[in-house]
Image 1 (cartoon, one colour):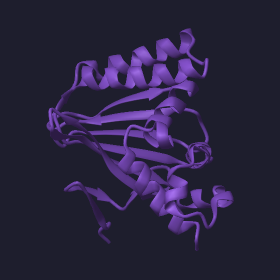
Image 2 (spheres, rainbow, N blue to C red; image 1 turned 45 degrees about the horizontal axis):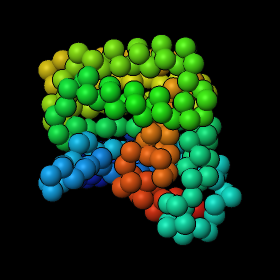
Image 3 (cartoon, helix red, strand yellow; image 1 turned 60 degrees about the horizontal axis):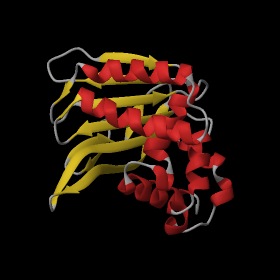
Length: 209
């Protein structure tokens, strides 16, 4: 049976995917910016979780979407829930891998430094992530995925470029992994407000059942 597709800014996302388990698309959005009065979209985001993530968020039951959206504790609970998570990015505006790497570097470094967790190990791990992206060129519709297993503090990063074999990198530094999760899922601190709004709307509905 074909999986239902959800359009995120005209880009198709399957409503379910299978990693270690079957995961559901529970939030989506885009990253964008006004540059010289022009609205520029960079990439679309789809966030997948095990459906049972809801059972780890019962303390937020009955809360309206707006309240969840403004509550960083909700997003912290979502990030730390012991379930499998998967983030799928699809490029809208082409970008060099080095530029994307710089975005990750500053976001992760700033977060970890603020929490006093940016040591030599984190710096080395982050350098390897940047190196992984460095030589790549992301044309429109290139795909970057982050897979966060339920039972380990690692992330498998996969890049799919047209006409090339997928390239993979496994990130094993727990603090850097956590900072990347927060970059995409961390409420008011996240890179995409539309994704945060979408997660709040979905979970407000799921938690009212």
